[in-house]
Length: 422
Image (tube, rainbow, N blue to C red; front, side, top):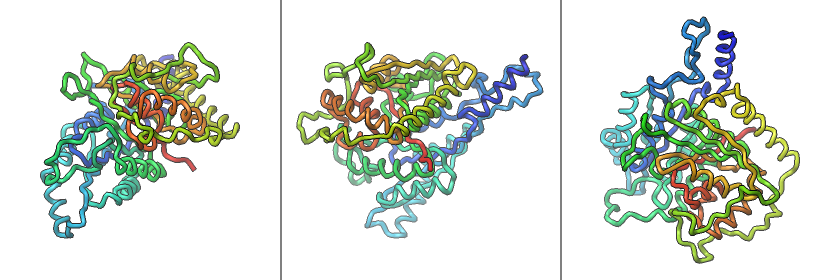
C-alpha cells in the first residue's frame, strides 16, 4: 500500500508544474530594482534545508527513485545601458568593460551564483531604447527561456538616468510614463510568442521593518492569486505552485465567478476605503476613455465554453482533486465565490490575506475573451470611484492589475501573460 501511494505521489509530482525546468530571464536596468529581484530569484530556488515536499517520498527505504524532480534553476540576467547618439564605438566598448567590472547589478547576481545553487549568466547590453525589446527576444530565443521577468518602472525611466542628469529631485511615481508603458506592452506582445512574461511591481517585497530578507521561521510570505479564468490566470497559478517549494510560503487562491445578479459577496470600492498611491485624477482629461460601447466586445459561445472547460480541467487536476498536486499541500487554500463585482471582490479578499511584504500574482487576462468583456465595464466604474494609477497602466498591465494597485492592496504585484499558443 505504501509503495503504491509513493508511486502515485511520484507520478503526480512528475506531472506537476515543478517538473518543468525553469529557465528564467530577469531584465534589470535600474539598481533600485535589485533587492526585490534578488529576493524573488532566491524564492524560486528552494534551499537545501527545505523540508520534504510533495515531490519527495517519505519512505527512505523505498526502491522507487525518489530523487527530487525540481532541477537547479538557470537565471539569465540582461542588464541594459542606453546607447546615446554621443556614444562612439570605442566609448561603447569602454562602457561595457567598466560596467561589467563595477556594476552592482552584475556583481550581485554573480555573487548569488557563488552562494546558492542558482546558475547565473549575466549579460550587459548597450543599445538604444527602441532596440531593448528585440534584445530581449534575441536572448529568449538564444537561451530557450520560458519565463521573462521585467521590473515595473512606473513614472521613472526604463534605465537609470545618467549621473550628470541626477541633480534634480526624484520624480513622484504617481503616473506611468509613456516610454515605460510602451516598452512593457511591446515585450508582452512580442516575447510571449516564445515564453511566458511577467512584470513585477515592487512595493516592499519580502521586507520587514525596512529590512529586506527571505521569509524566516517567525514570518511567512503570503501569496494571493485571484482566478477569473483564461490562460494567463492558469499561468499565474502554475507560477504560485512553484513558490510552494519554499517552506515558509502560504498560497491563497480565490476563484471569483461572475454572477449575473447581485450577491452577498459584492463589493464597491470607494476613495474613502483605500490608502493607495493613485494619481489625483479630478480632471476628465486624466481619465482613460470609458465611453466605449460594451456591445462591441463580443465572444462566441464556443470560445467561452472552450475557455471554461480548460479552466475546469486545470482546477480539477491541481486544486479540486485532493490527490492531485498541490491540493494536498497544507499551505495552499482554495475557495470559490460568486460576485456581480468580481474584480472588486477579489481586491477586498486580498486585503484580508496580504500585506506590504507579500505578493499578489495575477494574470494579465489578455488571452481571455470572457474576462475582457466582464472586466471592461467593472473597471470603468472602479476608476470613476478611485482614480487611476496612470493613464497607460491598464493598457500595459491589464484591468485587474490596475484595480489591485488603486484598490488599497499594499502587497507587491506580479502580472503574468502566458506564452501564446498556435
